[in-house]
Amino acid sequence: AWGKFHSQGLKINTFFEPEPQDLTPGVCVQNLVKIFAGGPKPAVDGMNLTFYEGQITAFLGHNGAGKTTTMSILTGLFPPTSGTVLVGGKDIQTHMDSIRQSLGMCPQYNILFNHLTVAEHILFYAQLKGRSRKEAVLEMEMMLEDIGLSHKRNEEAQNLSGGMQRKLSVAIAFVGEAKVVVLDEPTSGVDPYSRRSIWDLLLKYRSGRTIILSTHHMDEADILGDRVAIISQGKLFCSGSPVFLKNCFGSGFYLTLVRKMKNTQGRGECDSGDEAILADKTLTHWLACIICI
Ligand SMILES: Nc1ncnc2c1ncn2[C@@H]1O[C@H](COP(=O)(O)OP(=O)(O)OP(=O)(O)O)[C@@H](O)[C@H]1O
Ligand SMILES: [Mg+2]
Image (cartoon, rainbow, N blue to C red; front, side, top):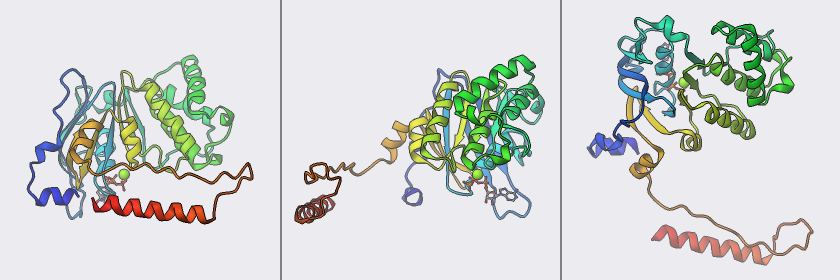
């Protein structure tokens, strides 16, 4: 659909909601370019994008669009080829050390210490960010509760399930009162119930923070994202609130179907008789009518 829009020559500007004037920019990506050695084309290709304080910005894009590369540059993992990023008004090219003190990151692939326990991880990172031992213990207790890992507090990271490791990685990104929190696909491989607890954690900690969340889940972007930024081939393709994007791209019908079941009088069986066949035929007829509209 994106290609279609481009080939029809529609104005790209219509895909960008005007920037909010009443919010404080937390992270400003400015003309960012990243060309990897030997890469056929730039991984990030002249990107301009602002993430605001007090908001969760969902960062969407196909595989290889450049999400992780952008996030890695803004967290100082490697330098840009050109352009820069301002984090809290400070330039990553010159002030990365002080930026790191208020930055939290959950990488796409977990980086945990196999033999440290869940509690030890949180304590370690909280103290690394400058908390006293006492403050770190308090933060650890609260965080364990928030992410639902209290029962695993003394378990070594290597013995956690994949989803639990993911939750621990998300928790680590928030410790030490990080002001800018970058989460690269935090809910990948996480079951629906745990995904919900990560969402609750993000919403609880959103205030006063700039949260950047990459995801492939549209429902997640819709529910959590105050703004959504979609990138394609290293370029910003569109950005705005979920409502704005729905107005831009939304079309078609939402159809809710409720099928009346035969009264089975508590037998716990589904109707598979004539009535069900009749219902299916009626349904098929209705769908055919709708599609022909
Ligand atoms: N270290 C690297 N060396 C060379 N090329 C790289 C490197 N890292 C990423 N790339 C390339 O840069 C492009 C963007 O990759 P990136 O990992 O940023 O995408 P992504 O949007 O995070 O994708 P995904 O959704 O799969 O995680 C891809 O074409 C990828 O092959
Ligand atoms: Mg990625």
